[in-house]
Image (cartoon, rainbow, N blue to C red; front, side):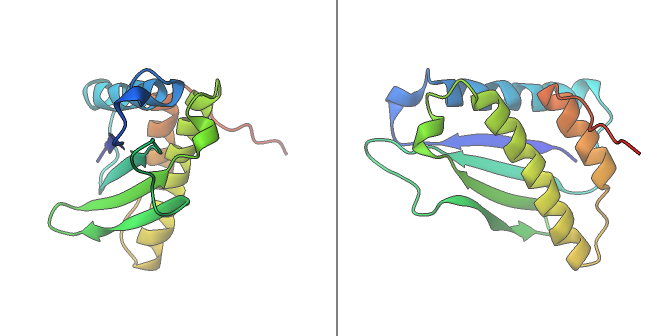
Length: 139
């Protein structure tokens, strides 16, 4: 039905970094999309961005699936943000690509278990949230 986007960090010094601002901007856009854009039917996708700080770092790299709860119809993901991305000027692009990856991984998960997941509607929602253009298909 929508994205839940959150940030996990033990370091308060990361609050004004480009990555924190990019994640916050996308979370606000996801919240706004609930009011202004037709949302896909089906599950909620919950992505938690895990920022490395001085006090704590994720114990993995990349993205991992945190499980699916049928009661809430929610599929959970965690994304370990690389240290070089914290101050990157490409943070918005990084977050956008992570959201696209979440949708692709969710599609693979639900397809393998023969559950409904409308990939096109989710891709359109990500485009709406991130402000990205649809892919250009050439023949």
